[in-house]
Length: 129
Image 1 (cartoon, helix red, strand yellow):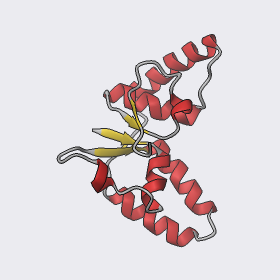
Image 2 (cartoon, one colour):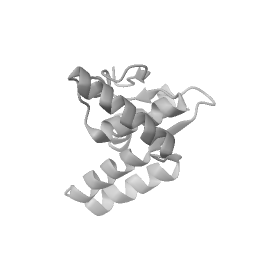
Image 3 (cartoon, helix red, strand yellow):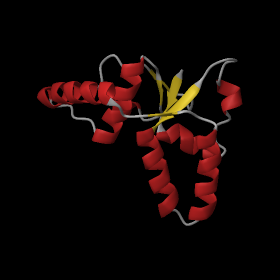
């Protein structure tokens, strides 16, 4: 399984990324509940909220939504403490997404490398390069 970050979901929604061109046969994709919140917020704030919410609904109906559960929460606390001590903080939503990916041993598909690179051990792929 590979986890789509919010930015890659937006690329899909805007027609800038055709997942059929980048996803290998049998490969499973998912999205985190944290990204669902970010995407929903963006759609609600947009000029075409109803249209964007409907398109988001279609996308999310095709993907499993991964929760921020106890395992990810414990990992989040540990990583956040390490990053703060090192002086390289990461925003809480991005760190929650990274914690879910790490807890599941899944790569994160994101174009926002600089947001996630401080998180050691996180495998990052970028389909927009």
